[in-house]
Length: 239
Image (cartoon, rainbow, N blue to C red):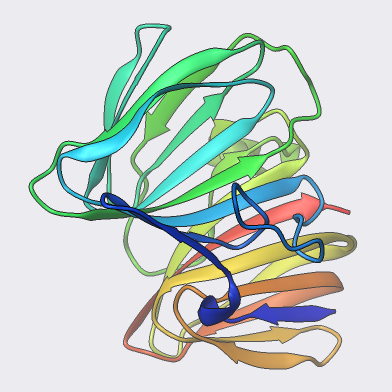
């Protein structure tokens, strides 16, 4: 099964410092047909103006993965963590029993990010925060955050769920085949460049940057870059 969600069709919220687009129901945007996929509950595509950001606010029992599309975000929380995460890198916060945090764009230019929320399998864990740099060279998908044993050798940031967030850069015409499995689903969003997705069941579709795509119930899918360079972020979750 393939479900294409063009960027123009997803939810939107805008104020004087934030331009947010919601792939799933979030905040004032509600669509009962878009409540998430498996344990994936939130995928927000945010542009944050320079010198602004999210003031301190609480979270509980959620895995919050932030992928930086451009610029950098500065995180600070009630545990004493403070860190700056740059383009192409990822930060993970396990909210667990509860955490107060803030995120600011302290850079001189506007920045863009994906914020992805995964409902954890384990609740009331000890809160924690971690960020990490990842390779930005063309190649296959790299696990950025994962709770799946199959990714242990790649040493992704741990999350408390049978799920994974992966990122990859492909040059024009380059393909990568990903083993999904019929009891799982993937949600893909290219950050830049057009891509072609082909499944082992013979389905085939082209998607544009910032479009969303659900792929479910197939053994494998192949991702091919159609532009000079394409970058994609993928959530792999159990159904």
